[in-house]
Length: 117
Image (cartoon, rainbow, N blue to C red):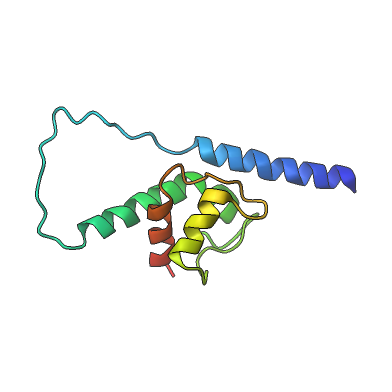
């Protein structure tokens, strides 16, 4: 029984570490970009949701399933948490979920998860 618990724990740790390593790197070279003004009031919210979706697809589906309905981790399509509670879990971990899986994009991930509810 101890060996089973050990291997289950190791699987969760490995999956968490693999999810952290899969996050896309972003190009920060802005030498050739030109600033643009937006007339859309929701551009920031839309980009947060979009960025959150990218992070979720790179870091969360390994444990929560491709459709986020649950696998090793719980179902994320029907959560009743506030944005602040989601951010806290992403930053500090909870249960078998390791801390820091959103790599600084906690707010964007929270926005995305709340948008799919």
